[in-house]
Length: 347
Ligand code: 3HC
Image 1 (cartoon, rainbow, N blue to C red):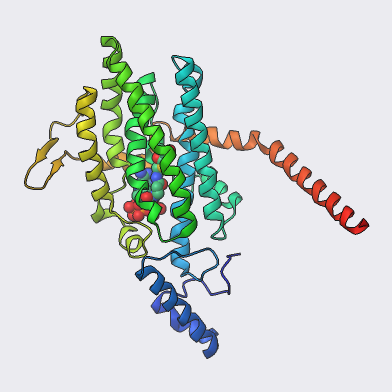
Image 2 (cartoon, rainbow, N blue to C red):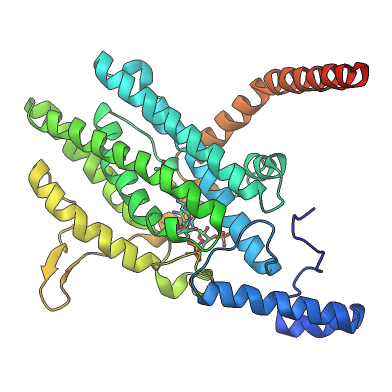
């Protein structure tokens, strides 16, 4: 059940379906619907915010549910590759930082599920889609974390890429998503810096530590570039997402910004980015870079990456193991409200 102020049949916003809708709506209802559409377009054109109780086209709602729930799943699944290292962190300080970071990612997932719930989709529906493999989550979390350097590189590059993508989402046209992203971005910024700082420490260490960092950079670099999504020419959702002010910067433009920002950071760190074609192009004012392996990207997105099955199985098990907690919380809430009702009746 959607939370819009009045019910509109699915697809009512699509011009070719309006005729069908007008066949079932009275002229007065049709006028109300058209006025709502005009108001929605005006808010979008004025770069304003759409709020949960505002009327919105069904396709706008669906796009948001798709993107926000995928984003929430990415945060939750994203806890797993690094969570593997909590018990093996090299010092108490690094362990405390990593626990805080992984916990932050869990929090991001919760804000985002809550934002998606304001669009009328339940948490159960979203989790069911994840657990049955129908929902996507970021490709990047289907790769293994082989050494401690991977944890630093995830902070520096994966969280760095995530921030690049997510800062523009703070200006997303849907209010609850935009507001959730402000806090998420602040925390992601800490994640990026802790990763970079951990790598700086390793690069001041032994040759073996330096080699470990370089090896991790070699394995993660291309996956991080792919994380921004397919090239703009192959991105079916971009044009409409940008028209609605959900997406502000295209996949390719964000990827380019990430490359340009990361090259000087790599230089300071003393690592080589594994791309022989990476070079400054003075004419464009940007770095040129080599070809991304899109076949590998799509194989991973479609469930055939190195860790897809393991990640999903871990999430499903965690959900099943938590069943008793949800039941206990529900039983407690029911008892509490029954007690309150009895007290109110007695008063
Ligand atoms: N992994 C998996 N699927 C991806 C993907 C990726 N890296 N990039 C794109 N896709 C999917 C899209 O979801 C879409 O599939 P769908 O139509 O079935 O939903 C398809 O590929 C085509 O891509 P589009 O470019 O047309 O899709 P979008 O316009 O939605 O753009 C996006 C994709 C840029 C990822 C956008 O959805 C977005 O900005 N999402 C919010 C941010 C997000 O989810 N980030 C994920 C990482 S979060 C994270 O890293 C956690 C942090 O703690 C590190």
